[in-house]
Image (cartoon, rainbow, N blue to C red):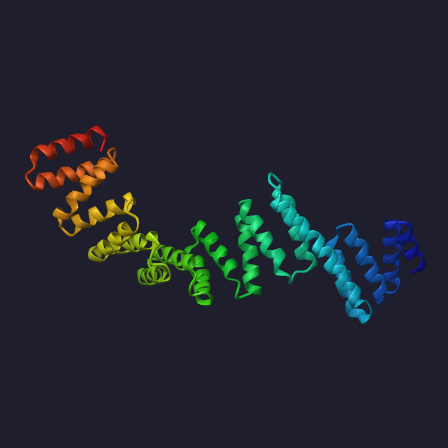
Amino acid sequence: MTAAKLYIKQGETQKAVEQLEEMLRLSPESAEAHFLLAKLFAAEGRYSEMVSHLGRSADLSPQYHGEIEKTRLHFWAREYNAGVGFAQEQGTDLGQAMRAFGNATIIDENDLRAWRNLAYVYYQSDSTNAAIDTYQRIVSLDAQDGKSFYSLGVLYLNKDQHKEAEHVLSQLVEIDPQHLDGHINLAVAQVHLKDYEGAETNYRQAIVIDPTMPSSHYNLGNLYWQQQKYSAAREAYEETIRLNPEDGDALYNLAITHLALEDMDRALPLFEQLAEKMPNNASVWRELGRIYAHKGMLDKSKEAYAREEQLGG
């Protein structure tokens, strides 16, 4: 032990490591040797070995518990702060941030701050599978982490893993019933799974949380249209337009909903408005031609159909 400490003092790290490893072969129960070896490995960035020897030292004797925690915290903070710096630096290689945060998770696997940052960096670098795996670990350790549940749900949606997204986002809205985007994305997953009742419930809950968001009403209208519930769809689209009069998609959907309800009188002014807003939309001119013909406005019908043909409709 004396020789190892002398090598450490002289900065001859490799000789110190060899001396301590030899000592542990002869006396594997030396808490001090494990602790000193852990510090040497930490200085070289060999964190898995560091953690192993710190753990062994702690198991063998309480003598170094305080020093062990100080050592762990020191190197965890060094790697974590380095990761934050790399992540925030414009133009940096995110791989450096990944390595630093990854090292921090090795040093202390129970501190979720490093895991959360690692997951975010994976997401930023389009390492989707790694991000999913990391968020899964986080939510398994913290069942109240709404942000991680949401991020995991969105990642599943982006990969068209709708069943997994539904499961995760259902957990999110259970722990945070007021999570607006959680309800909206859960509804999106449920639509893909043909759970229309569940999707309606969640779109309606999103509207309760924020009745002024046009997209919730619009998506609800689309859901009703998909189920041929045209009267309900009409109400949803009308509310969308009331909240956002410039929403051309909602205006178009409302117009074709009037047609589905065989209400050409209400559809006509909307299509005429759309023709001004979207003069190059062939489908708008086609519907105008059909409505004008039905109403006996033949000249206007011919003009509309001609416009459609000109646009390649």
